[in-house]
Image (cartoon, rainbow, N blue to C red; front, side):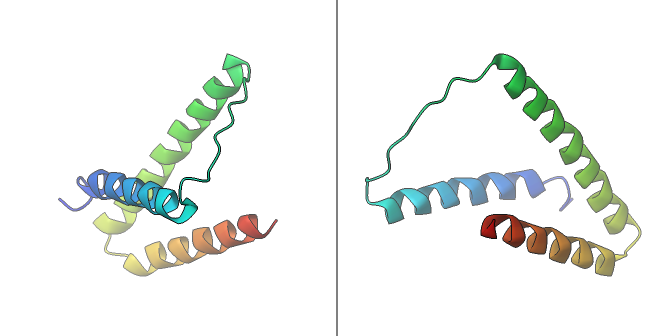
Length: 88
């Protein structure tokens, strides 16, 4: 049941993070639009879809097999990777 409602929690987290960004920027944020070819968006969307499905299958596998420690290592790895990317 928790796996099925994880998307709802993600939506709330995304909305709250956007709200937090808007509050912290005090309205001083400028939005710039860059026009890319439509194929860039298509490739990005397909890649996002594929990796989202792979991630969900991994989460479902670990939840079904009660290997929660593997999911913890996965979260630590993704978190460390994200931090490294933000430092670049």
